[in-house]
Length: 171
Image (cartoon, rainbow, N blue to C red; front, side, top):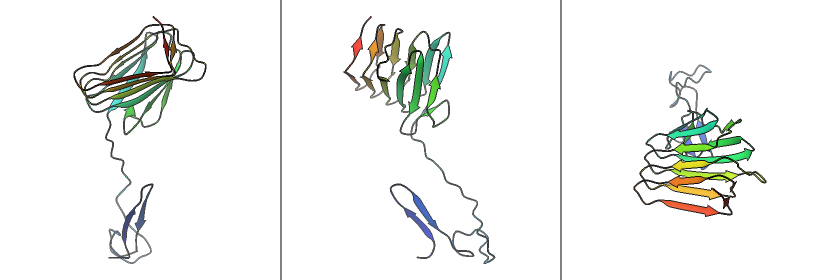
């Protein structure tokens, strides 16, 4: 109607509300706008559970598309970040795990998954890493990794991409 409604911009949504008009649920001019609605986030990604089991960081994805960054930020310390709607343990925030003594194993299951494995400056791993993406058009990126242990990358059926750049992998 020109007075009320929403403007959808690339970085925000602007709501135009008028007391007693469209968007005011009670439709009464009374100095209060009643709106039972709330902002919502539509998540297109899945959920990855992450936990330390017997000194090893274990990631388990669901069968929805998962997009995850695994960064070793210090000795025995990893930060796991979901991207494009992927949650970590049900949350959108990055999660940090310390006391990871026996490396990392990631099982992302089916879906078109992306996992990026990277290290902070000067970090060298003395424990191994295993990534299993399951079926789907998966991508595994290994960037800046310095590891003195075995790194295993397994992909299932699908059009998969594995890209290793600026890495030193022993084992």
